[in-house]
Image (cartoon, rainbow, N blue to C red; front, side, top):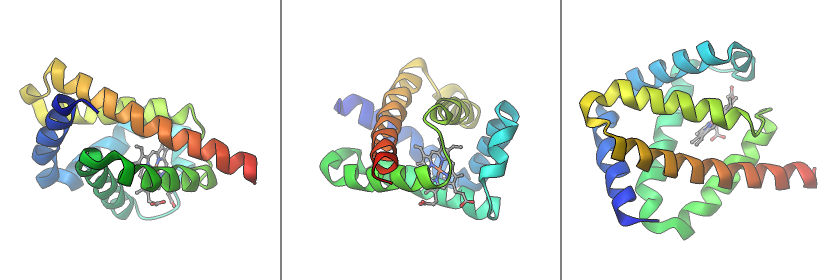
Length: 140
Ligand code: HEM
């Protein structure tokens, strides 16, 4: 992955980490507003779920420097999402909610360059996850 993209994503994520619980709450608010039907897929405590999501995004963002090590982690995550009832098209609405959350959380620091870098990284993650989910579905 382009080192500039990695640097922009890692740099901007450092500003989100201190406000991770608020960012997670903002994210789920936006997600469920965009698609209320997705609410029913989440069974647990949303604060805990938000913490897991932020940890995993953080791990993936740090892992961009070592994509071969990150790939199996994302593939396993994608396969588990197949089990949660997540559909490939849900990745679009989640990506849009994530970008909106970053825009709101980062304010002026969310430049076009930063947006494009996050779009690249999210689309890469989503495509690895959905391919693994498809394989899990086909094997089931
Ligand atoms: C880059 C994309 C995503 C990341 C990093 C991510 C991360 C996570 C993590 C870390 C968990 C905790 C459980 C586990 O590790 O298996 C989880 C659970 C879950 N995620 Fe995601 N996720 C992503 C995309 C999505 C999408 C597109 C949806 C669709 C709505 C979704 C819905 C869920 C649901 C329903 C659960 C289980 C909740 C429960 O058990 O109650 N996720 N996700």
